[in-house]
Length: 192
Image 1: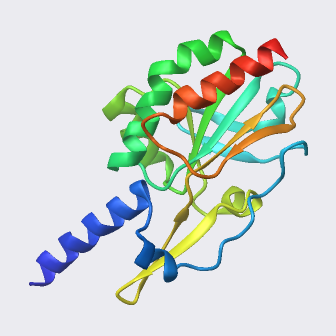
Image 2 (image 1 turned 60 degrees about the vertical axis):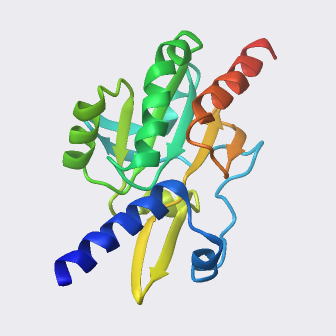
């Protein structure tokens, strides 16, 4: 019985973390926190460890690349995998438009390495296990279900231009169409 309950709990958390909470689950969450930074403001700088490379500092891209900084709840879960694979499949176009895709979750580097290997991801994943950057961008969230509290990053994307300024924030992401939506916006930056 305990094993069955544990398996059901894992399935529940996976569905909520990657597909979003239902209305009744939303009522048990902490109050909504405004998204960190604002359109037109400089993106808060940070340095985080990256899978397979040296730590990444956001400001190192200034002057050379736009950045798609996307936060997601958990590696190797259904919605997060769809979103990551969509960025993988469009990454060559992002690169051609001088844009770096950076995925951030609170998973550790070992989890990121498995996620990258399982799905041949071709962009950088950053590890934020202490929620330092999630807090900085106000995407840290909690959910309580049956007395158990779950702590993760919300699914929010920030588009940052070559000057380090936030140009667009996507707080409500459809994982199936999100990469294409962001790509279309990046193209407007190029022509503008």
